[in-house]
View: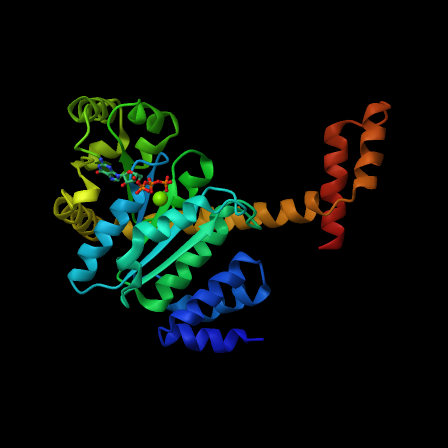
Length: 318
Ligand SMILES: Nc1nc2c(ncn2[C@@H]2O[C@H](COP(=O)(O)OP(=O)(O)OP(=O)(O)O)[C@@H](O)[C@H]2O)c(=O)[nH]1
Ligand SMILES: [Mg+2]
């Protein structure tokens, strides 16, 4: 069994196998995963993290591939974490992504990893963020995080990025969905992909209108809308330029460190919520639940009263 100190050394020497194994430990909730993270923590924070979020099939992976190719051609090292929303049992999207990443993922300057969001222990966001830190410590210039933007956990993952990109496909009310899901609010850049399809103009106009509707971010910085055809590498230069511009903006305005501080605080809170949930709720045996329910249903105890007792017991044992 490989030790955490061997893995720490491996990551420090930029060995991909050590990185891949460490991420697996994180995914499995193996305590060695946290030891490795602790051991490389001082190296974390150098990568420019770019979150790429959008509805299923809008072209995120194709964009990630095109962007990665462009970064690598420029001499950069790139890490990619794709959070796969599909069931670990079907694995459909995983396979599709592998094929789409193809040649790019095979480059020595690219580390690619997909993580299943279902069946992950301790919450999706925490495991993904830990993995992202490991990739950062391993040493990449850019770290791309692909997530499907349909729920709260995806917004959380996007919260791990320095630059949050929201991808929209023309038509089909994608822009409206993104707004409902709270994605437009978190966007630093908006990419309208599949610009070869009908309805691009209208979608861009709608997005522009949404951005104008009482947005806080817009007051300090305009959110650019970029058009791409990821399958043809079209618009990728502009996309890359806007990413660099956003990075410069963050540097110049000293917003990066306060952004990261906010993210770290939310992450610590999430770790607490996860561990408390695990301890309080997941470890309560069924017979105990039956007992609690019996008390509540017979009228001797309220739900809040039971909850206070559970919390009290936790205090005693921890
Ligand atoms: N016409 C057109 N098709 C595109 C474009 N970009 C991607 N596609 C196609 O759209 C389909 C989905 O692309 P993906 O990159 O897998 O989309 P995704 O958002 O990563 O999908 P999920 O990860 O499953 O949510 C593929 O068949 C792509 O070839 C584009 O700019 N124009
Ligand atoms: Mg994808």
